[in-house]
Length: 183
Image 1 (cartoon, rainbow, N blue to C red):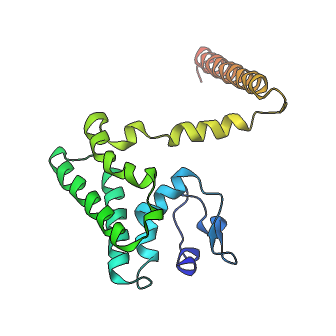
Image 2: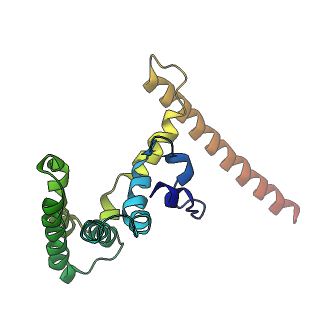
């Protein structure tokens, strides 16, 4: 599986460099962001598992990946929500046949509630955390004084806003001067 993932090349901006998150010696995935987990679970894992596991295990995992891919689409047909609910329940039943009871915790149980959440809140992309996590990464780069990170973030962000406003004003003045000269 790790050899397959290390040979995967994805378009720029699609996800992190897959080779950068793989540790082939220890057979671990390291430094995963939530978006990387999303891409792995919905797109790459079904490809990487081909021909590795027994068929019943592989099909159950691929079915879960297909479910996660289906609920992450921008448009979800409300008529298909019942089918999606049945699919995730069948996946969990399949996992109960394969994995020991210690595998199951609250996180595996929460999969059952995702369809109801979509029914109430709408598609997942409207209430996921990727944009906020990305913006927090930008804000963390502003920290200069680790004793008081909030102050340095606020100060640096304020400076950036002021610089952007100043650039907009200068751009506006430049376009006005060109208009007055008849350029």
